[in-house]
Image 1 (cartoon, helix red, strand yellow):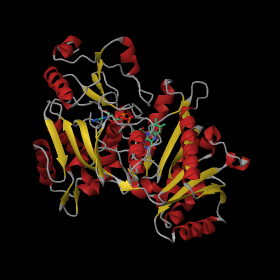
Image 2: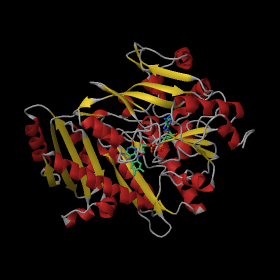
Image 3: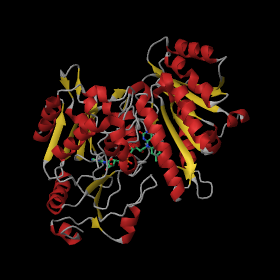
Image 4: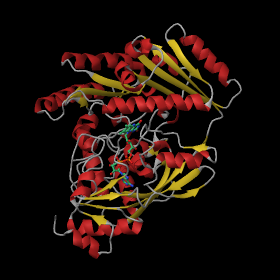
Length: 492
Ligand SMILES: Cc1cc2nc3c(=O)[nH]c(=O)nc-3n(C[C@H](O)[C@H](O)[C@H](O)COP(=O)(O)OP(=O)(O)OC[C@H]3O[C@@H](n4cnc5c(N)ncnc54)[C@H](O)[C@@H]3O)c2cc1C
């Protein structure tokens, strides 16, 4: 430990701090295949306790990393410093207005969903991990999910944040008010005098790097400084509360389950389905279906399923849905159509279970492995991109699991390998380099919603180029001059 020990944390009045082997082992893993043992774990009660820890950590140079549910897939919440678990005590809904909610970061998304539903409201981003993941984790990874197609990622909903910076200073950012660090950041970005957006991909969702492109809109007329924290993975500051826009739950929902002969036929159809403006378009291929989808139709066990969902309030809503079904009838088999809440919810639960067990699938020491599991390209080129991807895996004779948010061009592809074998690890790096190079060339992103974490950060210079990567480093220093906020993520 750098210049202090655990008793120093107790001395400053923190009682709920643990450094026993069990606790450190539990917090040494997340939903990735990485392992990093932390120094200690604390469960802060409020922003003042977070501040105390940051003050001490800043003086002693100890890393501080927040943790929500630890469902991040790239090692984002792992660190050898102090872990702040915000789920135990900083998990409250603070204020519920007509069109917004203010929450502490440790609130679980489904818990919030249930409260909002009582008022007929919702926050659309809905990761498959919603039963566990927290709002703090969602903001910090810029999470999305199936309804990202119709509604975008959580970046579209966060109206303001309060935080504690690495030096213990309290901060705040919304469209009208922001602190000195934010001011410095805005001045710095404007001083670059470049069109930031040209460095960013041409896709509908992106969790790679820092989202400078989202801060300014309409030729700098509108400024959303809070968006710098979206996808920042706790590397700039610790969010202690956030104000999030909420929407009315639509009156009508309809969900159609289609079966295509194969995944290529499904991908080819994506642009034409998009013309019907669905709010979700999910793809599950053979491997994923076989893992969890208990389809009655035995044929579907060898093909590809696509879930297409529509929301609406207008009287003509069902006419649009029937038009869609008629249009698709000669291209795919309609396995099921649901026009009520119960059947729509059942289908989504089936999908959740299906991919949850697909991710956990193991064959001996081999299992589905991330790194290229979250690329996103423009949906118009999804079919060609898919051919490219699967050709690479065929070259190395690799089995895989694939599903994804087809309407966004966001595919979750995991080759099945033994990540503990040195040669497989090298192979995975070779594949990642090839895939990411192509993704960048076709103006896609290496991460649509999962983020960078320990595993993907080294590819950020490839994604944005050295010039923008240097800008990211400067941004990091503005907020975190001693680089103690979740180091090793976003910039190295
Ligand atoms: C089975 C499965 C399915 C998934 N499906 C989806 C999906 O459909 N869509 C999707 O987008 N993602 C998905 N994910 C990824 C993951 O669940 C999301 O990124 C989720 O939002 C992470 O939330 P968490 O609470 O677990 O965060 P954690 O993993 O605990 O943390 C994530 C990051 O947020 C930081 N952080 C947490 N709280 C704060 C805070 N208060 N201040 C600053 N930084 C903070 C952490 O330091 C870390 O860098 C899935 C994961 C799994 C395991």
